[in-house]
Picture (cartoon, rainbow, N blue to C red):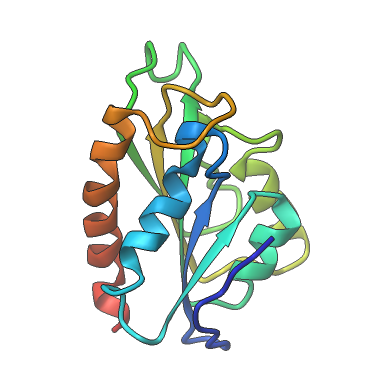
Length: 167
């Protein structure tokens, strides 16, 4: 399900997408960042919460000048070492074939799948930035673990910095 707060479209559109499910503990990190941005993001920025299904991600970012995605991830050793809950990763995808590759989404399909599909359908944003927060707990239940909750404000500030040139 996608919940837009504001819906500009076209080549100058900017969207922030929080991926996750608030009923799976740390998987709610993406929506928590979007909630924090509701009163802070510039008015022309569209805020979206989605479950991470690739076609919904593509629909949310298609045609945007900038898409910023925030999601909880599970670290995948040996790429990044042992999991460190609350650790932040930032990836910039400026062209086809430049995947995120170091972490795996907490959902069945990762961002690389969505990116490959968007490239094939010619529905990539001009620039895609991914903020990934390493999760500690993805079990059923509400509420972020302390290290992930502590990362929400930091990621929200980083997203605002990313939006700066697009205001």
